[in-house]
Each structure stands twice: as structure tokens, then as C-alpha cells.
Picture 1 (tube, rainbow, N blue to C red):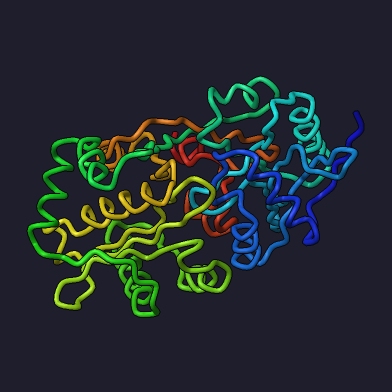
Picture 2: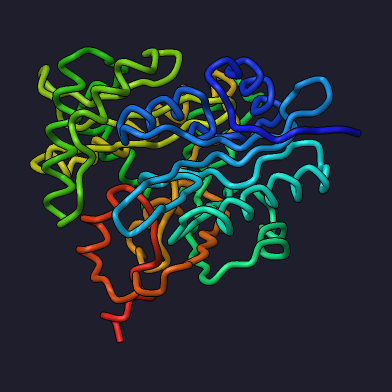
Length: 354
């Protein structure tokens, strides 16, 4: 059985779609449009390694981006907040998985790589393949929190089914949001985008985080199609925006991507009402999963909030090969500045922590 390995080209987009839709557990981050988004936002060319069979069909792949810095090259699969890449193969063919991983290892060994990280898919049960077949220096982990959305339930029973999935404290928050008379609707207008961007910036700065820049959201509007690829759910009262939530719709999964809230309404829980209504809508439309995204092990409050919506835990891992150990002498701030949006090494491993 012959095969060849080459990098994905722009002419391969239909083959890529045929490949990733072989599984109902591929995520937004594996989509062609997300690849375009990262290419334009990072101003980098992707290097998606693909194994093609004798009929020129993709059988396994590793999505890659490379960042050339003065110190050397950083590889991620994939870069940017919460993105997954990893080794993709959907027929259970170990030979194809090992072959594409060998190509990745060859790149690390023969190019000017200073740090390379593969990030596994939360749906990879056990994550044993990379642990067993990749030589790595460091391993980091996140907790993927995913809800199995109700299926084949009548509209009359759906609301109660989702309600009962939730912890009693979350049910109380949903009830509270209903009591305050918000309107929960999908609104993909420019006004919703403006509120989302402005409030996201305020919310993240309020917790000393790094907000996504405005041009990232502008690129989403250019590359993705409203209603088909994404929706902005908004909570309004007397025509005033109180909260909003950008979700992506890909394959069988809803991605909880950017939630925002006007802090003066926080105690009235409009975001809980938004999530509840969006979950109902997703179930009605036939989606199987609601992906809350990754949670760091030390984010107890974030983990608790998500878990109370009836989530299941899916651990996923960052496998890092660090070829230049001098990077350990950098500070967190220096890494963020020198290698923006790329994962280099867990900040916990830096020498400044010892």
C-alpha cells in the first residue's frame, strides 16, 4: 500500500474537508477556515503535513505553524489561544499515524527548531499514541470540558432535560436570568460585534489577561459566514446590550468561544440565560457536543463554573521538545514578547520560578 507525504496546498481544500469530516469529533481548530484565520492573523504560512494514499486521498495529518525568530524556529500544532492540532487519523491505521509523526520528528531533527509542541485533541481517548511514540522533553496538560447535548428529545422536554443536567446552583442562575426579563436572541449585526469586542477587551483587562485584538475579530467576520459558521448570542434589556457570546458551529460541536458581560449586570446572570438558550438551540439543530474549551489545572473557579453545566472531563496534553535549553532562562514576559501567540514551554518550567 503506497503513500506519499507532502504539505497541504491551497488546491487541497476539498480533500482536507473530506478527510476531517470522516470523524464527528474534529473541531473548529481543524477546519480550513480556521487555518486561513491563523495564516492571516499571524501573517504566517501554514505547514500542514499530510499523508496521501495511492488515490491521493488524505489519510493522516499534522497541522503545523512555524514562527521564525532571531533565536530560531518555534513549531506549534497549533498556535494561538486554545487551538488544537495533533496527529489526525480516523481509520485506526497505526502505520499512517506513525508515518506522519516520523515526518514531524524529521523536521524537528533537521531544521533550525528551538521548541516544538504538539497539542492533542481532547477527544483522543487516553492520548497514548503520542506518549508512546514521541520523544519529548516536557508535558503540560489542560482539562477539556465538554457537554453531551441531549439528542432525539421533543422540544417540550428539551428545556427540562438541559435544566436537569445542570448543578442546582447553575439552575438558580438560569432562573435568575429569566426573572430579570432579558431578551436572549441571535444578533450577528455590526452593533453586536462592536459590543463583543469592546466588552471582551474590558473584561479581560479587568482580570489582568491579554485580550484578543480587534483585528482578530475583524478577520472572523471576513472569513467565516454568520449563521452557518458562527452566531453572536446577545442578552438585551430595553434595547441595551447586557451580555454577549460568540459561538462557532463546526461539524457536530458548538465552540464556546468568547463570552462577555457588562459588569453592571453581572449579578442578574444574563450570561447564564444566554448559554441555556444557546444549548437548547444547538440540541434542536442536531449538534452533539458543547465544547467549553480548555481549563488550566489551577483554574478552580473556571473549572467549577463549567463543570456545573453537566460537563465531562477530557484531558489533553502539550508535548514539547525543547532543543534550546537557554529558553528556560527567559521570563514569562520575554517569551510572550519574543514569540507572540506561540507555545514555547510551560511557564512553570522557567528558571525564574526556582
